[in-house]
Length: 129
Image (cartoon, one colour):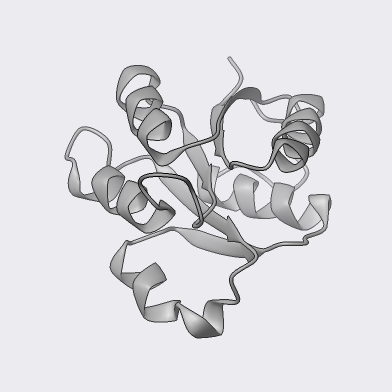
């Protein structure tokens, strides 16, 4: 059964491109564009991993990440922050929200896939199963 990944980003181009690449790699992908929608989907579907932008309408990515990691029923879900905000400006907040990893936009799709595989405990180059 393919691993489920939730993409949380308010940019349609990012949603489309990353979603397409992850589906091609064998993952089951869901996409939402706001923090509030993300929280609902995470609680309902319990994805294996969340790709989470920081700048979101309503509830920002830091708050979403904290809600995941502070909830005993959800804290096992891996969270990768993917953002255009340079981490030198927000490293303490990334650590405080307990994200599993982060990647800067723009990024290489192979780098993103490798980080996803690492967070999911998959072998390098393994399909999303």
